Length: 507
Image (tube, rainbow, N blue to C red; front, side, top):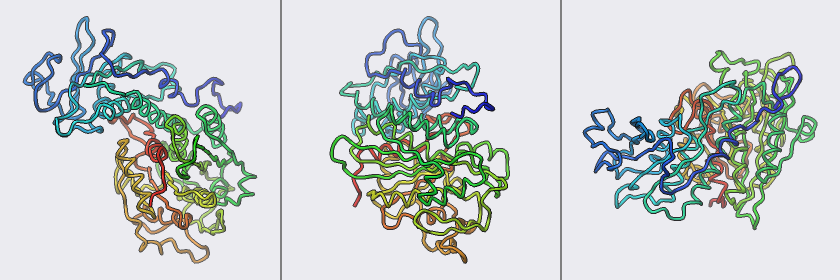
């Protein structure tokens, strides 16, 4: 973190504090011990209520509990662990998503307890039953993600870290691998959350590079940092242009992961890393909007988070990442409306709005990825307010020039429970980006803004298979919501990790 003398930041302040909490948490599938502080029991909306609940369905319903998925009823018990009855919905409708949400609800309902036990007697009905490995992964993910809280800057806190969770499930099976997958995915998301939650005065582009080096050494991936002089030599005019108004140095952070054996493919990941986005000369209009702009580097945070999991997930592909990091500030040296920037590869870009900066910094990286010869590119960015308008805060739009690559993102989304929805890359809108004085403009018309932004990015990938995730709507939540904790969500880190883990170029 930034340690300059005018910034009073403790030298020992943790840069990614969520990792310590994860490392101290133990999850296992076993008989629940007597020393748990809270006991959760799953109850379906149909069929019998498990006898160890101690209440029949009529009694539960009289207390307002109908076993709706993700609902809970907490019953304090003298001399015993608190009982938390957890709703699972209709038995035949049980999915991994329901279990992930159920575990999150239980952990939140037992927020003061550090040692928890959760018992689910049946995993669905006979025809739709989940296997214990899938159930274990979902439950562990929900618990780990829901107990997260960014409190490192608080002098005192009531937050209680999760010490242990014992899952009592039917047929224990070989579940350690599922628990490991859950840990690695949660770690990716927690790293992304911690970075996006960090105040902008604490986390500059230079600091981001330093943290990447620390994480690379710990989790087995390479890190190469490109300062302003190196970016000038590379001709990265998009990133350099956006950086013009800032007193902070930019950084391009290149991450490399090489698997132990012959790579199954080569995947490129590009993340937007605007460390703070004021809008530049096109200043953003409201304080609430400005308060969220420390999270405008959520794409870069998601890529870096995903890299922390590649080795431990046994990823079989080579993976290269580009994090394009700077802040976007107004000043006497800022880039201006009407300026023309020259991106890596020579494309000239007319600046029609300095708040459409994310696509500018990413243009350089997309060209570099194609030059690297990757088999596919997935980029991720908090790119447009139009993404939030079109799909809200629960779903991220995905675009692409190659259906097979888009489908990899969609499949990973389903596996990890981060919802995406494919929107059309409608090329009828491409003329909106035409410029009278440059090859392309950085802003389209007033409508379909997420699409025109994606069309801008497509210009720089050539024929390389490519998918684009716009996480502007999903980057944060104002309140706790299932496994999403108030603040940065880390959305996309687990999707990228899931794609990379078994990546093979799609046909």
